[in-house]
Image (cartoon, rainbow, N blue to C red; front, side, top):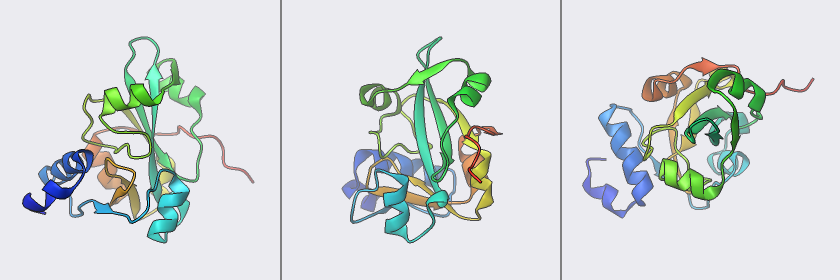
Length: 167
């Protein structure tokens, strides 16, 4: 994408595409026919395992009202106690908080190109995969990357932030 074709994309996807282009990321956002508001919907649409979806979960840090973005594997659940141990006490973030802090709606929160830079943690479980997909700023938008790209694009630390997987 050089720029002109971005004009027809939703504003959030345009921001993500610009950030990816500026970072010289080799993949551009793609728009799915159906919304992928959940990791399972995105995985089904892409024909991949749900674990390969890098889902973006926003929490609200209580001490300063900062957004905390946890990027986790779609087949894992965030362990809030582990997150709190790393960034301070957090709470749930409602849709209004998510939109005002990130510039994205729930179901389309990208790991990059936020309106206000959040505190970011990357789930180490994503590194089980060679290729992952993340939201591109809209419930229909996604982009392909490697876990190492996610680390490079966000500058965020990789941490153990999920609940133990079942037997």
